[in-house]
Length: 130
Image (cartoon, rainbow, N blue to C red; front, side):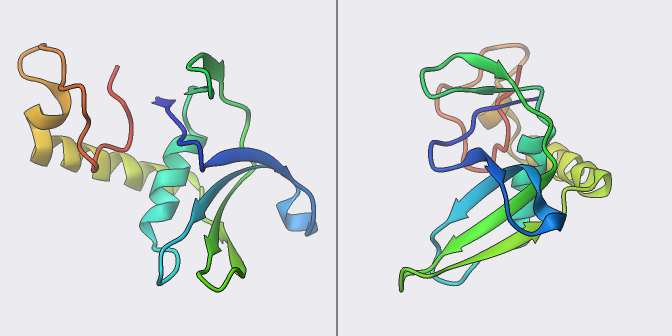
């Protein structure tokens, strides 16, 4: 897997609670009603990627990720941080969901019979195909 991390997402060193020390992948969310469960699927996919695309478009090796976090940036300028499940079971679930999305969206995401996929990916595509 190769992840193209959006600029508002990031990998950072988290220092704080002993259980959360190490390298964490953080997904910043600004929705009105909080963080949804599928954020764990998104972050576990990023965390298991082989590489990421940096801010100038170069492929970089993905660091070992110890934790995935979701940070809800509330409209009132406060925040809440959630430690997300990034276990192998959640990554397996992501792979199942990914395969279903491929089946449902098929040619729209991945092209037809080896053709190049469309330049614009559907919103439901969690990773860029090889």
